[in-house]
Length: 247
Image 1: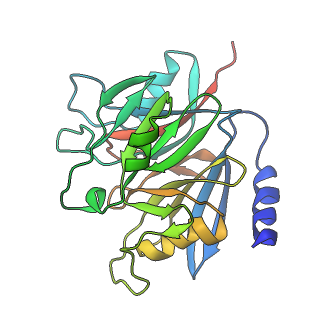
Image 2: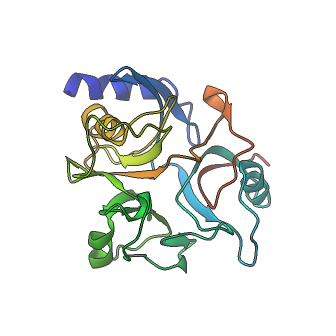
């Protein structure tokens, strides 16, 4: 396990050319293939964007690039960042630039979001985290950006109790976890996988004690380093890594 994590760190470092550079690699796990991209929140700008107020149009990676360009920034990396209602409003918590645009959702319901425990991915000053929803509600950490989704994949080192190793529910899936050194790991499967296998990627290969499922049916990725630009994706929330354009 330690050798695997060291190998991941060395492989990732070979991709990093400086701030705002994605460190992406292909990882094989249980006969499936995943793209995993890692970022250091102490060095890189990680944000969450929702559909603008008053709009019912979806977000695209092109739309996020347009938003960033207004501040002389560019899109380094993007991934769909949570579940949404018709009209693209978020199902759960959305915090953008410190403003709570939609409250934490602790209701019961149907579907993956409500497969408790669900959780929150958040970004603060120089750090990022993933927490189970009730723990987040108790701690109320100071966050600049946050998105709520579900279910949790890994909770304090344990696989979600509802996941079955022999499940026949197979989808392309994407999620986010926190590496032991505090970096953020975003992963998306290249093929349809079950929840349990996806969760063990985060726990057993990446060493994440906490990881969160982001979605399945609309899983998408913007990562030029691995030639991925899912430009036709329509999303309610996007997690983006931004870089500064030269003057």
